[in-house]
Amino acid sequence: MIILGIESSCDETAASVVKDGREMLSSVVATQVATHALYGGVVPEIASRAHTEAISGVVTGSLAKAGVSLSDIDAVAVTYAPGLIGALLTGLSFAKGLAYAANKPLVPVHHIRGHVAANYLVHPRLEPPFYALVVSGGHTSLMKVGSYTGYELIGRARDDAAGEAFDKAARMLGLPYPGGAAMDKLASEGDPTSIKFTSATVHGSEYDFSFSGLKTAVINYVHTAEQRGETLDAREKADIAASFTGALIYTIVTRLEKLLTEKEKLPVVLAGGVAANSHLRRAVCDLCAGFGVECFIPPLSLCGDNAAMIASQGYYEFLAGVRAPLDQNAYATLGV
Ligand code: KG4
Ligand code: ZN
Image (cartoon, rainbow, N blue to C red; front, side):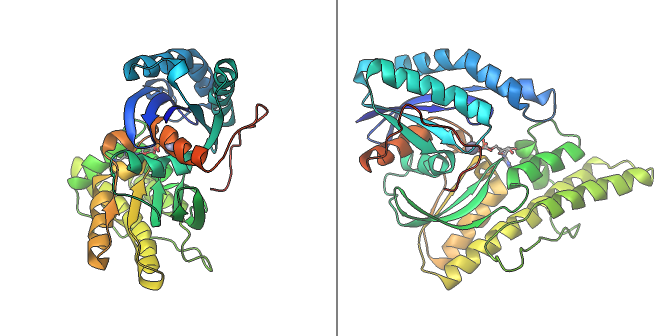
């Protein structure tokens, strides 16, 4: 079965053709990062317009690269939630038009489930049940994936997502947007024990995450230095990056450790843009090794937003009978 996937929930316009949920025939991603970098973050209205301009070429390109035509496609899968509403509506409306015109079924896909499915494309052995940790610019979610379409939320970010905290901390250190990858490199040069940035817990919800306090601690640290008339040198910036990263990873890993200690031992899947972080990848794999459970992480190319992950999850949603009506709406927030 051949699925065309379409993704436009944030600042990447993407389309991909995937066979039987596991084999990527093409994956085209048009990123708007350079445009939004001018403003230090994603500007929703600019994102919607950029999706509108790019989507036709991106979809045509993905079909051409896969060597298939629209008539070869069995279904169109599209991200319908969560994300920026205007951005989501661009992809969803395009997908509706395409599915209607070509008389193909339309399958709605939840973006977070898509991130998890990125792993199916590169790990043939991976099958539910497993735990999934999606860490991205918009989400930090810990879930149990009981079946391909059976998700149970265990913990989530109560305020800022991990990627948001990374981007803000990076900005405070003078790194260009989005700063996650640059923070990763800088943290490798610093000492993670040099500054005590504490990790917050959410009272009564031991599996939830809170990163806004950590983000504010970095902002305060940098402002205090500025108010004293001090200029942070390269060494101090690296120490801040390393200490911030250490505290953030501690927050994530302790939730996972608690889960593997108290609940059934299952393989762990890491996904989302922040899953590209080398320190996080190592920490999660080390933890899994200690518990004797398998750890699955996608390659860097499939951590960030793409449409292959949407087509992959779309395949399993299709098999489960999930279809979008032509009046399908998009949702900025929606449970997984
Ligand atoms: O999954 P994604 O592409 O978009 C959302 O669905 O949100 O994630 C983007 C986020 C950004 O915040 C970016 O800074 C972060 O992923 N990121 C990283 C790294 N590479 C990307 N964060 C930490 N370390 C990295 N190496
Ligand atoms: Zn994403």
